[in-house]
Image (cartoon, rainbow, N blue to C red):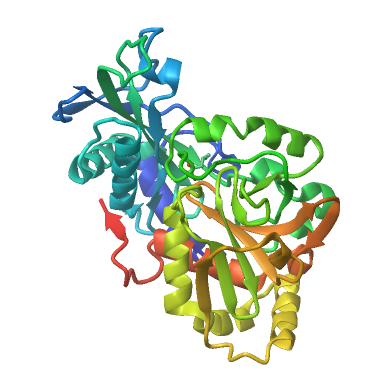
Length: 404
Ligand code: COI
């Protein structure tokens, strides 16, 4: 969405208001819960398959105090988004991938899971039932949160006798909005709509996951276990924590809520998936987008960029390279913490964070800066390529987008 399209945009908003678009301030969305109208609920017993779910009014659910999820953390969640196209139609991004990831996680956590078709149908029904909460085009998205929990009562350390698959949705804006880089660089730090650099601390003592554990699935406990390190880092002014592997304490793993990428010249590297890292759908999509569009896109679009910081960074990047700029290599491998020392850019990816450029990483008290206080060109290009695809602004050659 470009500001030049405001007439079309106004027409769409007028039409949506006529259809009853929710009456909230769409310009001030962050990443927090705005209760919507309907949630989807489907239950099944251990050993059975999910068969029929239904939409219910959004509200509290009843659980036994001895429910498996409350006592032993038997549960998984997913995260995906619905966006509004310029014409007001609704798009989902790769919902089948979330369904597959939930099935893999459920197998690890000894839970039954919905089929891919059941999952996608349930997401579709929940989004359509709550469509007046999908932000106008370009104002944010509808975050979709599927949960799979052991809802039956159990005391022995064993799988729950009953499971609940539940989906709720909420309109969201930028995940890191509250932590954006206002303090240090003020408004100027936001050089591209929707993205501002984040500042990470490497915590060498706390680890997110261990080999053989559950770091590679979206189980609930992986997330609450970062609160302490994340809170301590935020109290010192950092946005979040970047974790290292727990065996060698030298390989990058991920940030509390997202995957990480390191850019050096024309090589983009990201930690390989080996059980301790969440296989992000945004991570996978960015790898494919970078491989397929690569620096072609970077060259064409970089020149047109209006931002001083981006142009400066673009010029710097050109000056660095003797490499052919129309070739980009994406590597999935072990990435050492030392590679951060001379990286050109670092960025994070995730459904919630989209593509978030990293402005600095502090390691053993040393602050390493990226992007010249702005947003690096590669991060910006990949953010634009992905979000334009998700919003229906570019042709979906990958067949990733589902129009409802
Ligand atoms: C997502 O990006 O959807 C996630 O699951 C991260 C979550 C911690 C907000």
